[in-house]
Image (cartoon, rainbow, N blue to C red; front, side, top):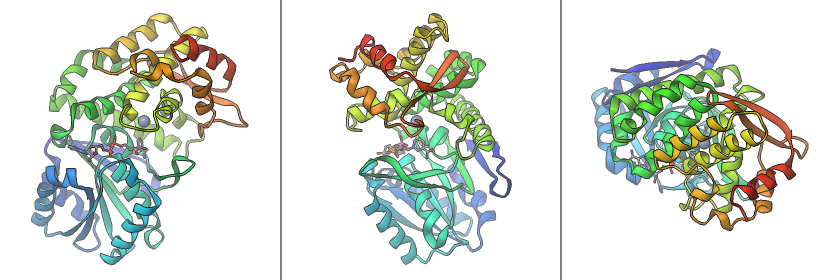
Length: 370
Ligand SMILES: NC(=O)c1ccc[n+]([C@@H]2O[C@H](COP(=O)([O-])OP(=O)(O)OC[C@H]3O[C@@H](n4cnc5c(N)ncnc54)[C@H](O)[C@@H]3O)[C@@H](O)[C@H]2O)c1
Ligand SMILES: [Zn+2]
C-alpha cells in the first residue's frame, strides 16, 4: 500500500510517496515527470551495493535509460570539491534543464544533489529517493539543499524543491540500527513539537518501528512527512512556524559541534539529547511541567537515545561556556541574541527569541557540562 502526501507549494507542488517496496515502482512513478526517458542517479557505494540493482531494474522496466554517478559515503561529500565534481559529471552526462536527476541515498546525497540540481544550467529538476530514516522523514522534504563550508555546516545552499519524493521503507532493512535510531529522533521531534496523539502512538509503536515493522514505518514516515509538508507549505523560507522544526537542534548542534561532527555523536542522537535539554530548560523556566520533560526523556532513553548531556559519553567534559558559545552561532539567532525552541508540553513547542544566554549557560552546567 502506498501513501501519498501532497506538499502544496503552488507551481512547485509535489508528492511524497511512502510505501513498502516502492523502489520497484520507481520507473513507472518517475516516467510521467520526464521530458525524455533518461535520468542520472546520484548515490554512494553503500546504497548502490544494497539497492542499486533494484532501482536500475525498475527504471529499465519503464524504458528509462539511467547512468549512475557515485559519490563517496559520508558527510565530507557535502563539500565544494564534491559539488564541483558532481556538477562536471552531470554536465558530462548531458543533463539538460528539463531533465530529472535522482538523489538516491541519505541526507548527504540529497543535500548535495539538490544543491547541484539547483545550479546546473540555472536549475534542473530532481527527485529524492531517500534510503535512511532521517532522509525519509526530514531531509528529503522541504527543499533545503546545502553543502558545508569552512565556517560551518549547511552554510552554502539553496531552496530547491524536488519534483517527487519516493520513500521505500524496505530500503531501511539494510540500515545500521544506530542510523535507524538517529532518524527516529526526528520522528519524536514532530510529535514533541506539535502532535501529542502521535507521541502516544510512538509510545505504543516506536519499538516495533525500530524493530523493522514495515507498516509502523510507513505510518510514521507518512505522518512525519505530512507534518513537515504542512509546516513547509505554510512557511517555505522559515520566517516563522518552520523554526519549530528546530526543536532540539540548538542544544543539539552545539553538542555535535563540540564533538567535531564526528561519529561519536550522530545528528539524531544530538537532536534527542537537545530535545531533552529543551524540555528540561522549559521546565526550569516554568513553561512546562516536569512530568512532560520526564515523559519525553524516558521515551528517548527507552529507544536507546540520549536525553541529556550525562547520557552522552564524553559530553560532560565540554564546558558550559563552550557549549553556550557554540549555541550563539546558530542561524536562528537575531541581533546576537539566542533564539530557542521551547515547549509548553509534549505536542506544543514555541519560539523564544532573545533568550538569556547566561541563564542557558548556568542551566547547561546544572545538566552536567563542566
Ligand atoms: N535538507 C534538510 O532539510 C536536512 C534536514 C536534516 C538533515 N540534513 C542533512 O542530512 C545529512 C544526514 O543524513 P543521513 O543521516 O541520512 O546521513 P547520510 O546521508 O550520511 O547516510 C548515513 C549512512 O548510511 C548509509 N546508507 C544510506 N542508506 C542506507 C541503507 N538503506 N542501507 C545501508 N546504509 C545506508 C550511507 O551510505 C551513509 O554512510 C546531514 O548532512 C544533514 O545536514 C538535511
Ligand atoms: Zn535534524
